[in-house]
Amino acid sequence: MQTAIVYYSLEGNTEYAARAIAAELGADTLRINPKKSYPSGGFRKFLWGGKSAVMAEAPELEPYEFDSAKYDRIVFGFPVWAGTVTPPIRTFVQENDLREKRVAAFACQSGNGAQKAFAALKKCLGRDALETELVLIDPKDKPSAENKERLRAFCEQLNAVEAS
Ligand SMILES: Cc1cc2nc3c(=O)[nH]c(=O)nc-3n(C[C@H](O)[C@H](O)[C@H](O)COP(=O)(O)O)c2cc1C
Image (cartoon, rainbow, N blue to C red; front, side):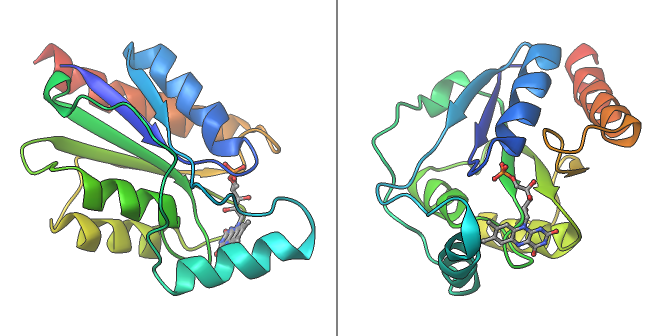
């Protein structure tokens, strides 16, 4: 089972988790970035990022290399923005045919909204369910035993499919 972790991260929490998951699964990672980056820090990030998320934008991405044929499974990782999936993930889903792939996802948030964000991702993918879902609370900024345990269980579930 070849897995690619495709993620967007504004401030490093999702990236932190993506690296930990990649190490556990032996997966490749692909960080996607919008051509026009969102502001980080201060109130502007909430304003611009929040608006973009609410409008369900699909911003143009910086060029990336992704050979879909190499992978059986995609694990999406994103920060929850305004209770929904982060816009660059929408662009990636629109640009790639993932119909034959297994798809799992993890979301980083500081409060709540991940379930709505997973629903938005599923809608975007045109499927009713994901293989498995993981919610982490700011894993880089607020390391916790709970985050660690959830992450371990998520990887164990994905690895179990691999072994079967
Ligand atoms: C524009 C914006 C909107 C956000 N909206 C939410 C939200 O609706 N719910 C929530 O729990 N956290 C929200 N957050 C917090 C992030 O999801 C959270 O801090 C996440 O761990 C950041 O991941 P990153 O460091 O990879 O960017 C928001 C952050 C930004 C910048």
